[in-house]
Structures are given as C-alpha cells and as structure tokens.
Image (cartoon, rainbow, N blue to C red; front, side, top):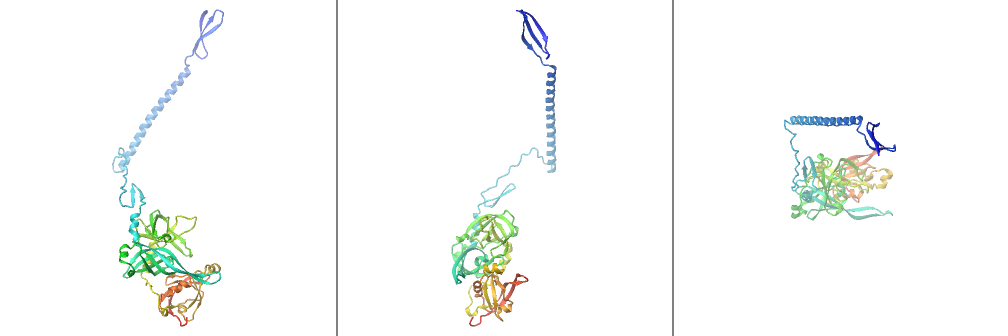
Length: 445
C-alpha cells in the first residue's frame, strides 16, 4: 500500500514524484523535467540569428540587382542608347561548306579546308619532272680512272614562253653536270631540255625546251604557273608542295608555313635563306613548287634536312628573292649545240680537281684548282693565277675538270664569259670575278 504522495523540487528545476510504501520503502513513479530558462534563451538567440541572416540575404539581393541593372544601363548608353538587358545573345551561323571557297569562317574563327584538289588540278599542268643524265668520273682504289653513266630526278615549273622556247625554272643542283636533260609533261610526253642559265649561289636554274619539240597536244595540256608574293607570308599559312618525289612522278603534299627567313647551310657549305614548311619535301621534289592556297608559286623547293631525328622540316627558296634572278636567267642565251672542235674556246690552264680529302687536309675550297697558267693565254690576260680555284663558269657552278670542259664546249673562241675564282688573300679565300675572252686552242693540244 502506498501511504502518501510526496513531491519535491529537483536540482535541475524539475519535480520528482514518489510514494512511500507501508514498510517505509520509497519508490519513484515519474520525473518531470521542464526546459530551464537557460535553454529558452538559447532558442530565442538562434531564432534571432536566422531572422537576421534572411534579412541580410534579401538586402544583398536587392543591392546586387540594382547594381547589375545600373551596369547594363551604362553599357546601353555607351553603345548608342541600345538596350541590351533583355536582348537574346546572337547565335553564330554556320557557313555553307558546300562551296568552292578554300578558307571558310565561323564567327571570328578561320579554318582550312583540307581538300586542295581544285587548286592542284589547276596548277598541275605547269609542273614537270626532270631527269638529269650524267657521267660520273673518279679514280679507283688502285688509282685507275673510271667513268659510269647515271641519272638523277628533279622537278621544274613552267614559268614563261618565248617565240622559240618553253622556259622552266628548277634548281641548279638538279641540272648540274648534265650530259642531257629529259623533261616529262603532264600528258606523259617527254622532250629534251637545255640549260639557259644558272645561279649557283641561289641554287636556281632556267632550262629551255624548243617549242618545235613540243606537240600540239602537249601545248594544249600545259599551262604557265602564276608567281605569288613570299614577302606577305605569315606563320601558320597553309601551303601545298608539288614535285617528282623519288622520281616516281608528280605527287602532292600539304602543310603550313613553319618559319620564315630561315638560314640554312647546304651540303656544299653554302648558305641560303629559306621558307620552312612541314609539307613533305623528299629527294626529287627539288625544283618543284611551293604554292599558297590560291595556287600561286611562293617558293621553289630546294632542300630538306635528311636525318633520322628530324621530320617535317622542308625548305623552299622564297619566290620574291628568286624572281629578279629568274628574270635575268630568262634573258640568257640558250646553248643547245656544242661548238665544232676547231672553234671551241680555250682558256689556257692546267687543272686539278679539289677532292674532299684535299679540302679536309689543306683547307682548299671545292672546285677546279688552277695548277698552272699558260703564258699569254686567255686566262693569264684575264688575271687568273696559279693557285686560284675556279668555282663558276658563266654563272654555272663547276666542281670538277670534266664539268668545266663540258661547259666550254658550248662556247666559241672570241666569246667573253665571267669566271668566278676563289683566291687565297690575307689568310683566307675570297671570291674574285673575272671576265675571260676565250682564245683558240693551239695546234697539237
């Protein structure tokens, strides 16, 4: 039995209820612990903070909106009072890619159509393949002289036509040392060509094909190339290279302008300024055309770094630098026939080849070494001296006695030609250009 109910305050501010049994034992039935005043204060503080945060957020939104509106209003005033706040952004329109335009523009972005077939089709009739038939001479291990026939491949560009000739530009090294030159046109026909003029320093040559040797069908199939402007080129511009790669016939590669005014040293030690491109330029491409996207010739392919660690670096002579030289070569006399034996010009020198071994051992530059000069000869009267090294004859580069003799066979006694020699002066070799009036060969020589 429960005798009575007792209520007492607890330490935490609540109340405990318990009853006393008849035996004096106490049993607790329930406990009430209402929130203290301290907890009530905490809840009130939290509510105030939430209310303050919401108020601040509303105020920030109002100020931000007002600021954005003010900026848009100011821009509209600057743009001539046009309202831009509610304008929809203009969507870029894609161009029509079905047209013939090579360059196409999307908004402010320009891209290049990789299909260059139309350009190639237009310019290919102005391209030719060249085969240089030559005689290689040398000395065997036992000192015996030998000679053998050989052929090398190159390319050319039809650049002009006169009353009697079709004129083609190529590289000097493509035609150097030739016995004969064979030119193949776009229709597959082949004609013999002759050297009209060369410039060894720029590695340029102009060769001529007599029009009488070109059929009417071929004349209707070929065209004359259009010259461009290499001075206006920019890095990244697209280019096309056409040439007789590896002697297989005309082929096409494309790329971009990788570098301009690139100075390169060639195999013979001479230097030149080139356009650099990543369009593939392989052996046989020399003398071919580097074209812009309009099909204009902007360079003449001339050199390629051939090394296993190098790829995508081809070189071309800038057409703006080459044009004045080409114009001069076009005016030269084409020598198609050798002079009769009794009329061949004579210089009066004893010659010796400067081999690579001699150059390495003695430092003498490559060319034809003048071992002796005949007294009162054309060479002596022109100022050629013993020890000079002949490197050019009438502008054409010469490396051996055989090459020089071949050239002289096309010149009559009495003709005046320029001869460039390297002369040792003040401890180094310098170029000296001399005018030689060829004499007649003495009897018995």
